[in-house]
Length: 279
Ligand code: F3S
Image (cartoon, rainbow, N blue to C red; front, side, top):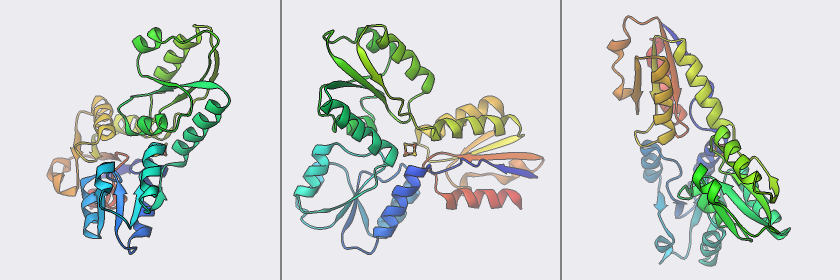
């Protein structure tokens, strides 16, 4: 059986960096992550066994006066960052540098007198974090209706940025609607290509495979998307969390199998599945 593993399967640069930073901190006394470091049960449980506890909100900081808090790749609002430091806790900032760059942009542009428009989902942790770094008025816009309804005084200068995982075509569409309103706009495309590249590669591999395996946590929305994309190209697409879920007998008569994995799937799990398919 020919097995083709997607080069983009698994952790993106920012997630890999954040998980590594937690591993490097293990051994320090009282280590916490602010929110689960990634959306993957196996990884979080494994880290818990090594003493890494998860804090879910600022209230969870109550009663803590020492320890190290790792901030995950999505980042956090400045007020939460300051609250952690004010407790006297050590911070390891694993915010993805691409997200950190957006925080810097909104500060700079705000200080230069521009209001901020964030193209993204206001409930997404990354957008909440970016909003929390704004020093000037900001607005989050996610869809066409919100873009059409957006208005501010005519003399306002704007800076538009994007959630890193936003769809590029949708971003362009929303920017075009806002641009027609006649404001002085500085538009900065801050979309990260990692998600797009992973999806494009899954589409190609699935189209060329007799069976496709998509590995990821059942709650991971980007893995669900990869499954949907793969299934469209290859009807024998299987969604598994780990090797245990894979029924190898189903692959018995297959010549070509493709493998991809969501952004929060650890390499170890991907490798196990890859090896098992090669036997
Ligand atoms: Fe990952 Fe950072 Fe891009 S977390 S998706 S590399 S913005």
